[in-house]
Length: 289
Image (cartoon, rainbow, N blue to C red; front, side):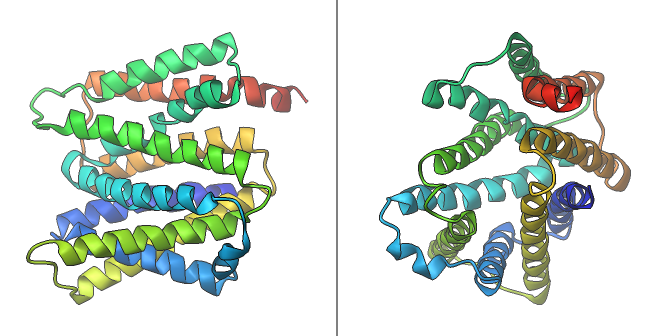
């Protein structure tokens, strides 16, 4: 349970770091790029055989390249939305995207959903609409479009991990794949950084923020992987997602004085219910046993 608690705390802390980076007015792109450089370096130092990847015959690296580009793109978007719209808004949308890999599993792997899971799909989609509703007095121009993009993008990222596990997981170690993805994300972000007109200055505060974010990001991943050694995935993921939602939103309300309208609050409640219902058919036998 300590690994589960670590995963919840560290993932929630990522949103707090992004919020603070925005408050300090630090440029987000170099912080995200440095974060992935740190993640890649830690992966290599901790023994991920990423440089032996060429010995694997399957074209897993194509999926890794796509995933790396998506990683840096949507991590940047998470940081942008966290600063502009708040921790609560961004966290809920990123976690609601769990519905996308669930639906993709039906199309790609011929999986089926129990009736209660279809209720979870409906609750999740309604929650997405309610969370995007404007609170009285709030001005969030264009954020619903960015929120929809975040919802879809994080869902595609999670779906790609299902694809990796189904087609390449038996051959390629997950540590190799993740380290390759981190490296691809870092290089992609660096290229954008270099090509961007005017560029960014890499001051000490940016360096510290990137280092901190990378350490927290990688530690969160380690906690996730270790927790899965002790807890069934069907029990870990709903507890992890719900814990992150509650903690991150609490941090937003308490530390940054964020506000939720009544409509947004109903959206949050439906989001929690949707996550529970989506995973109910999987963890029900665990509870019964």
